[in-house]
Image 1 (cartoon, helix red, strand yellow):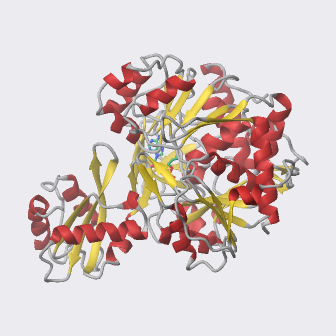
Image 2 (cartoon, protein in one colour):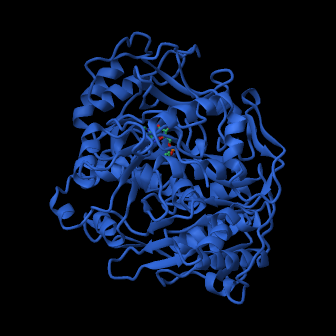
Image 3 (cartoon, protein in one colour):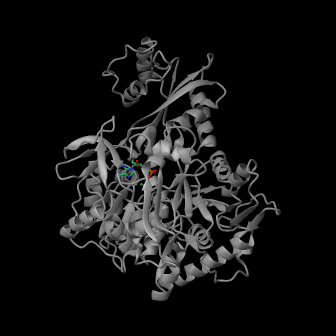
Length: 635
Ligand code: WT7
């Protein structure tokens, strides 16, 4: 059994030991897993070249640790409870034994369709059980899964497929989302027009909508799995073999493919799930994230299954059929641990308490928050109305690149403080630096958050472009992993995350690069130039504000704004749609031609009285004009 921290003193001693003897510490945890062959070296690392390796030459298969292990121990325990979008459709419960059988059938089908170890498989699916099955089936045979959130556009999907040279896409015909039906297969069809590497598309029927069919490459899921054996030997994987690729936005260029390894990722997600949530054997656990994001990978699939837990997977949205759906599901399955995002909490707060009172939430023991800073109002509402003042909130700070939670309260063990991620988990060595990279030694401080020692699930590379990984994370400050977040530390060593210090916007917990949105806007034929910044948004945390220069002769700015939004939906997806668009005749630029975003941010925030020094601008008059336009021109 993996060691669970049981008291504040034990947290302190474990933490101390983990940083004094990290190799011994992590090896003792890794010892609890099934290895086909044990590692011979625990750790090799060099942040200067962005290289980290854990459990070198160890051989394993993560699905043996998620599934086979528990089929031995408790074959009939529920692994996944699937709650459909519609309230009157019946749920599906998959036991560990059934899940392993389905995973093996799918794994055999993948092999039969020509997928082998190391191949990249793109998964573009709604939250249906086959999504989890497909992910695990890839891992079973050593194919690298890359889930693309099913809200991304055909263009985004094809860019990702081409970056990875995927052979296969696994998708559904359509998706149910609230009262909408989304045409998933159509998006895939459009995307693969420009993807010559795709040889097969496996299609799970969900909505039974009409779809285009190309019998050369399309095959239905049920046909592909028919007659396949329910037994599939787990592929022997090296600890450092990639397990998956997940794309995420940075401050420049196209989204990058974050690569996670097999061994280290397994150890870290398993350990943090057990400890942060203080998971107990029969707990019912629900993470509301979509598997299209890292939270769904680490804390809906892998972390819970590695602990033999029961994990709920919800197909729908929090407001369908009404805004009580989350509370309904907690009551229905007697959920003990509930993990969601601040944006969901804020969007449900506005409906008041009546819907909550209709449900029994007394099963809840622990509440989690992830993806963005949680404001104190939302924290208190969550604590009082959902947790009834009885449940600690774990505010978990981490990133796609970190693979698992790095800074968080440990439920019932370490203090929970509104809006503060609090303390580093064992093995994590955060430091704050100033912009020159000098360590801020005094405890009470504010600076840039870096990590100075590797943990097992740290990013290994960015797919096909290791130099980009080095430049993005390891080149800002010598010898440090740079997170991109600003952060405050209090006298007791608690970390409060302020937010991104780069050109990354966090909209409803989703990461969007301003450059990506600008590129999409610039695709509009009447747009000459644009600049995108974030502004505070009541529900989403941050909203997207676009300043746009277009050619003369535009009279109907409302129509133009609609067209621009459609362009962004087409290029990226609805999550990146600008909330506000202001047409301007110029942008504040320095003499060297650089846009001064600081000024645009202030204007977008409505704080344009205090713009600081604008004397270095090429044309300072433009600022006054944009300020006037802020009040009149926003569409
Ligand atoms: C960025 C990472 C972690 C999985 C989901 C998001 C922000 C994340 C918190 C938190 C304050 C947070 C950071 C981080 N963030 N969690 N608890 N408190 N900020 O993963 O899309 O890779 O985004 O989300 O700014 O850098 P991601």
